[in-house]
Image (tube, rainbow, N blue to C red):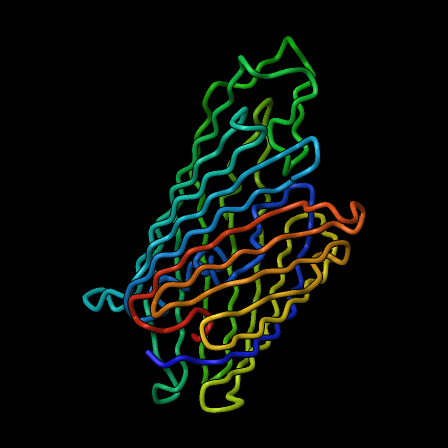
Length: 302
């Protein structure tokens, strides 16, 4: 595999809402989570894993782990993926585990120049609550402002449901466009009472072009909309030199992020952190990613 230099500049638009789903700083390391149509998009087989800790130096901490394996299956003329996502608050007081499976058939048009990849994804998730550790005022789900404040109403020890999602991805030369709809069936996730998870729409696009023989420039836009929205602007740029790279940018207009990474052959490791402007000098989030790409294609090249 050739050593390469990449300059990558991306602008991401995201929306923070009261019913916000999990989000990651580095979408290139969680591609199937961004859109299930990325299942098998590298052509062979890959593994991607990311761990994100949120709410560092605040009263509410949550940790998210996402593991995904996907690949292209010739017999099915498309990609398959299996994902496991774990999301917990306050050291396990509340925990939700998602298991997802997606299928993304590949179609071609315009004499093979246009690649279209629709997808469908089914998820089964289980939410559990350690009622022995709960105290009045504890968050049952920090992402959706669920707080336990009634000692006469305990959350169930376990709640489960299914979730349906779909996506579409198009590739034409160096241009990539995608759209995905998550929570299509709006499952009930309320820990106390009924609360239906709103549909989340994700649109994204990217364009890259060659600068030098082993250098590329990539421009990306990602937009998430979920019920009542508030617009956030994310900026990050990555400078690759041989096997090392660094990332710096702004997240949600009120925070900055920075990251470092290393790639050796088909193995890539990245670390990113956040710092909220309202808490200067204090780290508010960490994200660690590890990817293995058996096709030999670096992340973000497709």
